[in-house]
Length: 320
Picture 1 (cartoon, helix red, strand yellow):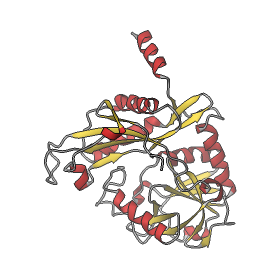
Picture 2: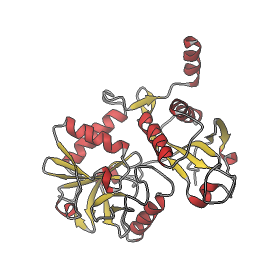
Picture 3: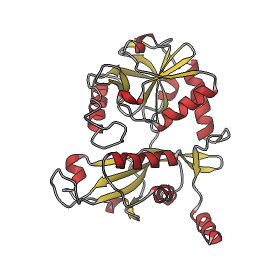
């Protein structure tokens, strides 16, 4: 089996071979889930490889650190450059970039005071997250028995490793029951999101999505879809959505950097709309992929090109 991760990993400012990128078994993160992370795609466009919304992802990483009371050694500009360098160092092709900030080893107590905060970035060979045919044919989803936590328990605006135990349980339950993914309700019974994706519903010419108060991660691709939908003249409404909306929706889809825009064709074995990829979902897919794959003008500044190392060095000399 081909190795998923690519050969070089950036750790605390240095490139380390995959085999040497290790942490201590007594690291705080291993025992308490004390990490924050991002998932970022790089696309191979006609003008070269470019990272999708690198700025928004790195800012969200730093926001997550602040919420989790973790102070990383590196600032926004350094993280931006490290992300680009990690993609370049691993061949500069389309890939999935994973930055992670985590508490390392000093003491095993729950109290993290004084525990070092480390930073690493890796790139992975990831295809279509929910299956190779998911974008064209859609997926089957169930409403999970696991709910997102109440707003005063876990900080769902932060992308923390600890939060993802909830996501794992949602995903495992769905797979065990023969579905590709699950939809979680929030603690009050309103629609929240998938295990790692934001949720959208379409009824008529209106696009609906749960609010940030519904225990969702404020998704980067979610933001893109709302921008594109409004450009198409569609009404976009962020609302508290009851579970019944899943039954009467004409279309449904997930969004996420990994999932991109993945249609949902059945929920709890009940057909969504016509049971196939809906016309609005398809229009949004086309508009989204045209931009991020370089076929349309990047009018929103969503792509961050990866210059070759030589070009970077020459630009630096010129600047001096």
